[in-house]
Image 1 (cartoon, rainbow, N blue to C red):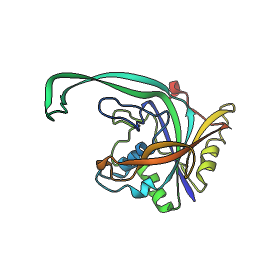
Image 2: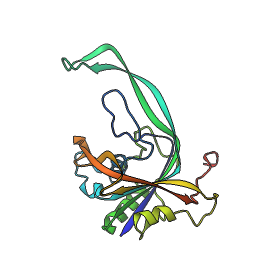
Image 3: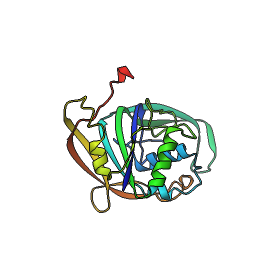
Image 4: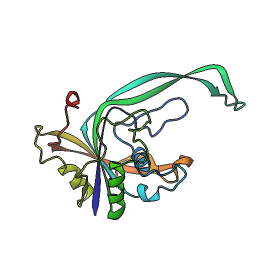
Length: 222
């Protein structure tokens, strides 16, 4: 069993799971569909290609710094009218967009196929397409790729132990979210088809807390 670790840090992130029509939501931590999409971008995998191998990986998230939920006011014109499926160029629609500001996450992906994880690790170092934190305009502020991000440890141990050798921060309570087969909160962000089909199923996510020593870089020093 091995785990691939990714650092997701940026001034803005958005991980929507229930967005419909003109409103775009965000969870308080990365969604599995969003992380799988990021991996597809790194590999250069087209939206029409299967993602079964990536979706089968078990995901966990360590929240190193909670983001601040924010709302962006946007408008759109030329929106299709439901009654006739035609664009109305004179109509303006308000589209609320929610996102997280200044969040830092450590994401882990656990699997038995170490060759796949190794290939993903290399792809994150030299991605085919630009990586984004939930939306194309939300670029990471530091590399997603971690030099020592591929570890021969189970998911929970890898997330709890990473960065502990630095001891640059006093112990503090960190939130840990782990994919679970039977219990936890239900998230509808499990890819069940190529992204072009926009089909997602449910998965369970169990939340726990632990006293961690994660090193969170100072944004001013970035």
